Amino acid sequence: MIQLNDQTTTQATPVIKHQRIGEKAVLAIIRTERRDRKKTDSLTGELVSIPNGVDRANRPKFKQELVVHCLVMPGTTMEAAIGDSRGVPAVGDRVRCILKGKGYSEWIDACRYHRNGAGLAVGDVLLMETTHAQQYDQDGRPKGDSILTQEQADQVARNITLGFYGSIELQENREQLFIEGAEEAYNNDQQRIALPTDV
Image (cartoon, rainbow, N blue to C red):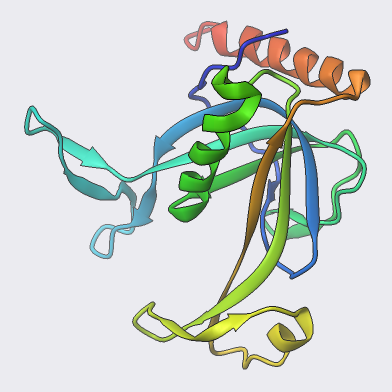
């Protein structure tokens, strides 16, 4: 069993995320990485880290997000997208989940109880299900009650911002094929990360 520690590199793989109520993702975890959340600076047009106060040494802190690199397992109906390309990924495809805000908090809570607090291992299963949606006004404040069916979500006017949300659960993987696939991908990533960048 490979113990999983945060890694800090980025790959151009599709991002899987909540987009329709009732969809599910069943994913074998390869690795995770924490990084600063970014936004576009209105003056320069460049991506900049989002400030989040200062630490005890008075150094600036930034809002964080977690990128979870995974392999798709059977039972996945959630779409993944990169650029203009989107669709339900095939079993064995690589995808990323980007967790921020409430989703990141739920991940931390799930990790706390996973394996009785012993931590994540490569190949463990991340289960995600989209359970509801929320409308927002022009100032980004929640508007109205949670939407619980996709039929209701489809009736929301296109000019209204709609966010989709759901559950996060971690499990030990019982499928040896996907554990081995995740471990192979992890080892390949480790070799790539270790390569010198000035060649």
